[in-house]
Amino acid sequence: MFREMAVFSGNAHRALAEAVCKHLELPLGQCEVFEFSNEEVFVRYLDNIRERDVFIVQPIVSPVNTRLMELWIMIDAAKRASAGRITAVVPYYAYGRSDKKDQPRVPVTARLVANFIEVAGADRVLTIDMHAGQIQGFFNIPLDELTAFPLIAEHFRAAALPQPVVVAPDVGRAKLARELSDRVGGDFAIVDKKRKGNLEQAEAMTLIGEVEGRDCIVVDDEILTGGTIASAVQILRERGARSVRVACVHPVMAPRAFKTLDADGIDELVHTDTLPLVHGKFERTPTSVVSVASMLGDAMHRIHTGGSVGALFR
Image 1 (cartoon, rainbow, N blue to C red):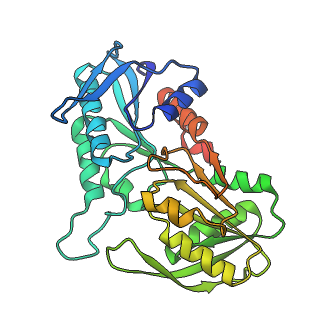
Image 2 (cartoon, rainbow, N blue to C red):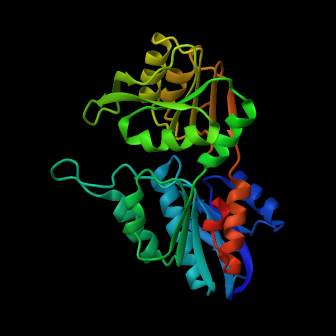
Protein backbone atom coordinates (compact mmCIF):
# COMPACT_ATOMS: atom_id res chain seq x y z
CA MET A 1 0.00 0.00 0.00
CA PHE A 2 1.13 3.52 -0.75
CA ARG A 3 0.68 6.71 1.19
CA GLU A 4 -2.40 8.89 0.68
CA MET A 5 -3.78 9.72 -2.77
CA ALA A 6 -2.68 12.80 -4.67
CA VAL A 7 -4.64 13.96 -7.72
CA PHE A 8 -3.17 16.38 -10.26
CA SER A 9 -4.40 17.86 -13.52
CA GLY A 10 -2.71 19.06 -16.67
CA ASN A 11 -4.22 21.82 -18.80
CA ALA A 12 -6.57 19.54 -20.77
CA HIS A 13 -9.63 19.44 -18.49
CA ARG A 14 -9.09 20.93 -15.06
CA ALA A 15 -12.86 21.12 -14.42
CA LEU A 16 -13.15 17.33 -14.62
CA ALA A 17 -10.22 16.84 -12.24
CA GLU A 18 -11.83 19.27 -9.77
CA ALA A 19 -15.14 17.37 -10.00
CA VAL A 20 -13.33 14.07 -9.33
CA CYS A 21 -11.59 15.57 -6.30
CA LYS A 22 -14.90 16.94 -5.01
CA HIS A 23 -16.35 13.43 -5.20
CA LEU A 24 -13.30 12.00 -3.41
CA GLU A 25 -13.36 14.85 -0.86
CA LEU A 26 -9.72 15.61 -1.64
CA PRO A 27 -8.02 18.87 -2.66
CA LEU A 28 -6.68 19.02 -6.19
CA GLY A 29 -2.89 18.89 -6.06
CA GLN A 30 -0.89 21.99 -6.92
CA CYS A 31 1.21 21.74 -10.06
CA GLU A 32 2.64 24.15 -12.63
CA VAL A 33 2.20 23.10 -16.27
CA PHE A 34 2.98 25.70 -18.93
CA GLU A 35 4.91 26.38 -22.13
CA PHE A 36 7.97 28.56 -22.52
CA SER A 37 8.12 30.96 -25.47
CA ASN A 38 9.93 28.26 -27.49
CA GLU A 39 6.88 25.93 -26.99
CA GLU A 40 8.74 23.59 -24.63
CA VAL A 41 6.51 22.25 -21.85
CA PHE A 42 7.58 22.77 -18.23
CA VAL A 43 6.15 20.90 -15.22
CA ARG A 44 6.79 21.41 -11.51
CA TYR A 45 4.90 19.78 -8.64
CA LEU A 46 4.32 22.21 -5.79
CA ASP A 47 3.24 19.47 -3.35
CA ASN A 48 5.41 16.79 -1.79
CA ILE A 49 4.50 13.51 -3.56
CA ARG A 50 7.23 11.22 -2.22
CA GLU A 51 5.81 7.68 -1.87
CA ARG A 52 2.26 8.96 -2.53
CA ASP A 53 -0.28 7.32 -4.84
CA VAL A 54 -0.34 9.87 -7.68
CA PHE A 55 -3.17 10.15 -10.22
CA ILE A 56 -2.67 12.45 -13.21
CA VAL A 57 -5.95 13.43 -14.94
CA GLN A 58 -5.32 14.37 -18.56
CA PRO A 59 -7.68 13.53 -21.45
CA ILE A 60 -5.97 13.95 -24.82
CA VAL A 61 -7.96 16.86 -26.23
CA SER A 62 -7.04 19.57 -28.75
CA PRO A 63 -4.23 20.55 -29.11
CA VAL A 64 -3.65 16.80 -28.99
CA ASN A 65 0.13 16.68 -29.30
CA THR A 66 0.64 19.39 -26.67
CA ARG A 67 -1.63 17.55 -24.23
CA LEU A 68 0.30 14.33 -24.84
CA MET A 69 3.59 16.05 -24.08
CA GLU A 70 2.11 17.51 -20.89
CA LEU A 71 1.00 14.03 -19.81
CA TRP A 72 4.36 12.42 -20.50
CA ILE A 73 6.32 15.18 -18.79
CA MET A 74 4.00 15.15 -15.77
CA ILE A 75 4.56 11.40 -15.46
CA ASP A 76 8.33 11.83 -15.73
CA ALA A 77 8.35 14.65 -13.19
CA ALA A 78 6.31 12.56 -10.73
CA LYS A 79 8.65 9.63 -11.19
CA ARG A 80 11.70 11.81 -10.50
CA ALA A 81 9.93 13.24 -7.44
CA SER A 82 9.81 9.69 -5.99
CA ALA A 83 6.08 9.13 -6.30
CA GLY A 84 5.09 5.75 -4.88
CA ARG A 85 2.86 4.85 -7.83
CA ILE A 86 1.76 6.83 -10.89
CA THR A 87 -1.60 6.26 -12.58
CA ALA A 88 -2.30 8.07 -15.84
CA VAL A 89 -6.03 8.89 -15.84
CA VAL A 90 -6.77 9.38 -19.55
CA PRO A 91 -10.56 9.61 -19.97
CA TYR A 92 -10.14 10.03 -23.72
CA TYR A 93 -7.33 8.15 -25.47
CA ALA A 94 -6.35 10.00 -28.64
CA TYR A 95 -5.02 8.23 -31.75
CA GLY A 96 -7.37 5.36 -30.94
CA ARG A 97 -8.49 5.20 -34.58
CA SER A 98 -4.92 4.30 -35.61
CA ASP A 99 -5.10 0.89 -33.97
CA LYS A 100 -4.07 -1.26 -36.98
CA LYS A 101 -2.46 -1.14 -40.42
CA ASP A 102 -5.46 -0.79 -42.69
CA GLN A 103 -3.41 0.75 -45.52
CA PRO A 104 0.13 0.15 -46.81
CA ARG A 105 2.98 2.02 -45.11
CA VAL A 106 1.00 3.56 -42.23
CA PRO A 107 1.80 3.56 -38.48
CA VAL A 108 -0.04 1.99 -35.56
CA THR A 109 -0.03 5.22 -33.57
CA ALA A 110 -2.25 3.93 -30.75
CA ARG A 111 0.53 1.47 -29.89
CA LEU A 112 3.16 4.23 -30.09
CA VAL A 113 1.25 6.39 -27.60
CA ALA A 114 0.98 3.41 -25.25
CA ASN A 115 4.74 2.87 -25.47
CA PHE A 116 5.42 6.53 -24.65
CA ILE A 117 3.17 6.40 -21.58
CA GLU A 118 5.04 3.35 -20.31
CA VAL A 119 8.50 4.77 -21.05
CA ALA A 120 7.58 8.04 -19.31
CA GLY A 121 7.11 6.01 -16.13
CA ALA A 122 3.38 5.35 -15.60
CA ASP A 123 2.65 2.31 -13.45
CA ARG A 124 -0.94 1.90 -14.66
CA VAL A 125 -3.58 3.57 -16.84
CA LEU A 126 -7.25 4.37 -16.21
CA THR A 127 -9.38 5.26 -19.24
CA ILE A 128 -12.96 5.29 -20.54
CA ASP A 129 -14.37 3.60 -23.66
CA MET A 130 -11.42 3.27 -26.01
CA HIS A 131 -12.21 3.33 -29.71
CA ALA A 132 -11.03 -0.27 -30.15
CA GLY A 133 -10.76 -3.03 -27.58
CA GLN A 134 -7.41 -4.29 -28.84
CA ILE A 135 -5.70 -1.11 -27.62
CA GLN A 136 -5.73 -2.65 -24.14
CA GLY A 137 -3.23 -5.20 -25.44
CA PHE A 138 -0.80 -2.47 -26.49
CA PHE A 139 0.09 -1.88 -22.83
CA ASN A 140 2.46 -3.96 -20.73
CA ILE A 141 1.25 -2.27 -17.55
CA PRO A 142 -2.17 -2.68 -15.87
CA LEU A 143 -4.97 -0.85 -17.67
CA ASP A 144 -8.52 -0.34 -16.41
CA GLU A 145 -11.07 0.61 -19.07
CA LEU A 146 -14.34 1.97 -17.72
CA THR A 147 -17.50 2.43 -19.77
CA ALA A 148 -19.84 5.42 -19.60
CA PHE A 149 -22.65 3.82 -21.61
CA PRO A 150 -24.53 2.67 -18.47
CA LEU A 151 -24.64 6.34 -17.42
CA ILE A 152 -25.99 7.30 -20.85
CA ALA A 153 -28.55 4.50 -20.66
CA GLU A 154 -29.68 5.77 -17.27
CA HIS A 155 -30.21 9.24 -18.80
CA PHE A 156 -32.56 7.82 -21.43
CA ARG A 157 -34.32 5.52 -18.97
CA ALA A 158 -35.11 8.60 -16.91
CA ALA A 159 -36.51 10.28 -20.05
CA ALA A 160 -39.07 7.43 -20.28
CA LEU A 161 -39.30 7.39 -24.08
CA PRO A 162 -42.42 5.43 -25.07
CA GLN A 163 -40.94 3.48 -28.02
CA PRO A 164 -37.12 3.73 -28.01
CA VAL A 165 -34.93 2.28 -30.77
CA VAL A 166 -31.16 2.41 -30.29
CA VAL A 167 -29.44 2.91 -33.65
CA ALA A 168 -25.86 1.95 -34.49
CA PRO A 169 -24.40 4.48 -37.00
CA ASP A 170 -22.36 1.67 -38.58
CA VAL A 171 -22.05 -2.11 -38.42
CA GLY A 172 -19.08 -1.88 -36.05
CA ARG A 173 -21.32 -0.41 -33.34
CA ALA A 174 -24.07 -3.05 -33.68
CA LYS A 175 -23.08 -4.87 -30.48
CA LEU A 176 -23.02 -1.60 -28.55
CA ALA A 177 -26.48 -0.63 -29.85
CA ARG A 178 -27.87 -4.04 -28.89
CA GLU A 179 -26.49 -3.81 -25.35
CA LEU A 180 -27.76 -0.26 -24.90
CA SER A 181 -31.19 -1.20 -26.22
CA ASP A 182 -31.41 -3.87 -23.51
CA ARG A 183 -30.60 -1.25 -20.90
CA VAL A 184 -33.21 1.27 -22.08
CA GLY A 185 -35.82 -1.39 -22.80
CA GLY A 186 -36.20 -0.96 -26.56
CA ASP A 187 -35.24 -2.34 -29.97
CA PHE A 188 -32.15 -1.63 -32.04
CA ALA A 189 -31.36 -0.83 -35.67
CA ILE A 190 -28.23 -0.44 -37.81
CA VAL A 191 -27.22 2.12 -40.42
CA ASP A 192 -24.83 0.62 -42.97
CA LYS A 193 -22.35 3.26 -44.08
CA LYS A 194 -19.53 3.63 -46.57
CA ARG A 195 -16.49 5.72 -45.60
CA LYS A 196 -14.62 7.70 -48.26
CA GLY A 197 -10.92 6.92 -47.78
CA ASN A 198 -9.09 9.27 -45.36
CA LEU A 199 -11.33 12.26 -46.06
CA GLU A 200 -13.24 12.02 -42.73
CA GLN A 201 -16.45 11.72 -44.73
CA ALA A 202 -19.08 9.02 -44.59
CA GLU A 203 -22.27 8.42 -46.49
CA ALA A 204 -25.17 6.50 -44.95
CA MET A 205 -26.37 3.78 -47.28
CA THR A 206 -28.94 1.38 -45.78
CA LEU A 207 -31.10 1.12 -42.66
CA ILE A 208 -31.59 -2.29 -41.06
CA GLY A 209 -34.53 -2.24 -38.66
CA GLU A 210 -37.89 -0.56 -38.16
CA VAL A 211 -37.94 3.06 -36.96
CA GLU A 212 -41.19 4.54 -38.30
CA GLY A 213 -43.05 6.32 -35.52
CA ARG A 214 -40.33 5.39 -33.00
CA ASP A 215 -38.01 7.43 -30.74
CA CYS A 216 -34.49 6.81 -32.10
CA ILE A 217 -31.24 7.09 -30.16
CA VAL A 218 -28.13 7.17 -32.37
CA VAL A 219 -25.17 6.08 -30.25
CA ASP A 220 -21.41 6.12 -30.86
CA ASP A 221 -18.27 6.17 -28.74
CA GLU A 222 -17.05 9.51 -30.13
CA ILE A 223 -18.07 12.24 -32.55
CA LEU A 224 -15.38 14.01 -34.58
CA THR A 225 -16.81 15.80 -37.61
CA GLY A 226 -20.41 14.66 -37.19
CA GLY A 227 -20.70 13.41 -40.77
CA THR A 228 -21.55 9.83 -39.85
CA ILE A 229 -24.13 10.96 -37.31
CA ALA A 230 -25.69 13.50 -39.68
CA SER A 231 -26.10 10.83 -42.37
CA ALA A 232 -27.73 8.50 -39.85
CA VAL A 233 -30.08 11.23 -38.65
CA GLN A 234 -31.09 12.02 -42.22
CA ILE A 235 -31.97 8.44 -43.11
CA LEU A 236 -33.90 8.00 -39.86
CA ARG A 237 -35.96 11.11 -40.58
CA GLU A 238 -36.60 9.88 -44.12
CA ARG A 239 -37.86 6.56 -42.70
CA GLY A 240 -40.38 8.29 -40.44
CA ALA A 241 -38.72 8.40 -37.02
CA ARG A 242 -40.84 10.34 -34.52
CA SER A 243 -37.79 11.77 -32.74
CA VAL A 244 -34.01 11.42 -33.13
CA ARG A 245 -31.57 11.80 -30.27
CA VAL A 246 -27.79 11.46 -30.49
CA ALA A 247 -25.52 10.15 -27.74
CA CYS A 248 -21.76 9.74 -27.47
CA VAL A 249 -19.18 9.31 -24.74
CA HIS A 250 -16.40 11.49 -26.16
CA PRO A 251 -17.44 14.84 -27.73
CA VAL A 252 -14.23 15.39 -29.70
CA MET A 253 -16.20 17.80 -31.94
CA ALA A 254 -13.99 19.31 -34.62
CA PRO A 255 -15.05 22.88 -35.56
CA ARG A 256 -17.23 21.75 -38.45
CA ALA A 257 -19.13 19.31 -36.24
CA PHE A 258 -21.00 22.21 -34.65
CA LYS A 259 -22.25 23.34 -38.05
CA THR A 260 -23.10 19.79 -39.12
CA LEU A 261 -25.02 18.79 -35.99
CA ASP A 262 -26.52 22.13 -34.97
CA ALA A 263 -29.70 21.31 -36.90
CA ASP A 264 -33.43 20.94 -36.36
CA GLY A 265 -33.32 17.20 -37.14
CA ILE A 266 -31.74 16.37 -33.76
CA ASP A 267 -34.04 16.56 -30.74
CA GLU A 268 -31.26 16.15 -28.18
CA LEU A 269 -27.51 15.57 -28.13
CA VAL A 270 -26.20 13.77 -25.05
CA HIS A 271 -22.50 13.47 -24.23
CA THR A 272 -20.29 13.00 -21.19
CA ASP A 273 -17.68 15.40 -19.81
CA THR A 274 -14.63 13.26 -20.63
CA LEU A 275 -13.63 16.17 -22.90
CA PRO A 276 -14.36 19.89 -22.86
CA LEU A 277 -15.92 21.44 -25.98
CA VAL A 278 -12.86 23.41 -27.05
CA HIS A 279 -13.95 24.37 -30.58
CA GLY A 280 -17.37 25.90 -29.95
CA LYS A 281 -20.86 25.22 -28.64
CA PHE A 282 -24.28 24.28 -29.97
CA GLU A 283 -26.74 27.12 -30.48
CA ARG A 284 -29.85 25.27 -31.71
CA THR A 285 -29.50 21.62 -30.75
CA PRO A 286 -30.51 20.91 -27.12
CA THR A 287 -27.62 19.27 -25.28
CA SER A 288 -27.32 17.29 -22.06
CA VAL A 289 -24.06 16.49 -20.26
CA VAL A 290 -23.66 13.28 -18.25
CA SER A 291 -20.78 13.55 -15.80
CA VAL A 292 -18.24 10.74 -15.40
CA ALA A 293 -16.56 12.37 -12.40
CA SER A 294 -18.12 10.12 -9.75
CA MET A 295 -17.38 6.98 -11.80
CA LEU A 296 -13.75 8.02 -12.24
CA GLY A 297 -13.48 8.94 -8.57
CA ASP A 298 -14.88 5.58 -7.45
CA ALA A 299 -12.47 3.73 -9.76
CA MET A 300 -9.49 5.74 -8.50
CA HIS A 301 -10.47 5.04 -4.89
CA ARG A 302 -10.71 1.32 -5.62
CA ILE A 303 -7.30 1.34 -7.32
CA HIS A 304 -5.82 3.13 -4.31
CA THR A 305 -7.33 0.71 -1.77
CA GLY A 306 -6.82 -2.46 -3.82
CA GLY A 307 -10.52 -2.96 -4.51
CA SER A 308 -12.17 -4.36 -7.63
CA VAL A 309 -12.76 -1.84 -10.42
CA GLY A 310 -14.89 -4.33 -12.34
CA ALA A 311 -17.32 -4.50 -9.42
CA LEU A 312 -18.46 -0.98 -10.34
CA PHE A 313 -20.37 -2.47 -13.27
CA ARG A 314 -21.87 -5.52 -11.59
